[in-house]
Length: 163
Image 1 (cartoon, rainbow, N blue to C red):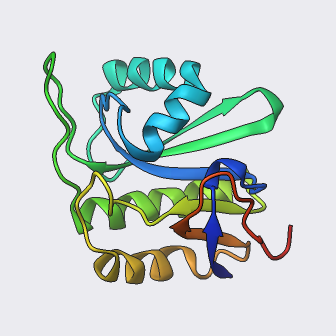
Image 2 (image 1 turned 60 degrees about the horizontal axis):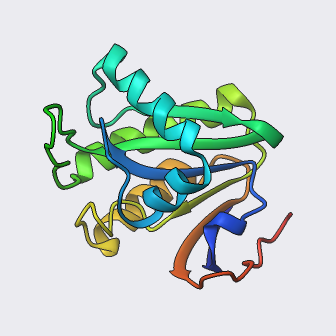
């Protein structure tokens, strides 16, 4: 079941939080920056994984931290592979493919709930009306609560039905 909520995704009680990034993303803007600051080892591990695997847009990588924290990095943008290069804009194909990978991960890992922002609409540059149907199609039938943080409210705990 999909729920659109208002609040701060960093305060989510969901089993996993997913967000969009690019391969080798510096994570210096938006939600990625907040996650980078909160979980610096996630950022380091992500770059190590990118260096070893050379991921393409449409893939997903999960990081697990202390306290059963689960962050899923969805590669919604083309990565910048050279020093100082910048991530490209997101594409609906990459979002769709990464959501497909996320749905498989949810089943494989046994997530009981999931939170995500309006994926790829900030730094990624896509419009929510183009992304929302992809989220509904790929995550709407997972059989777990999926909280879509459509409105950001700093420091505010969202009402997450079922948790």
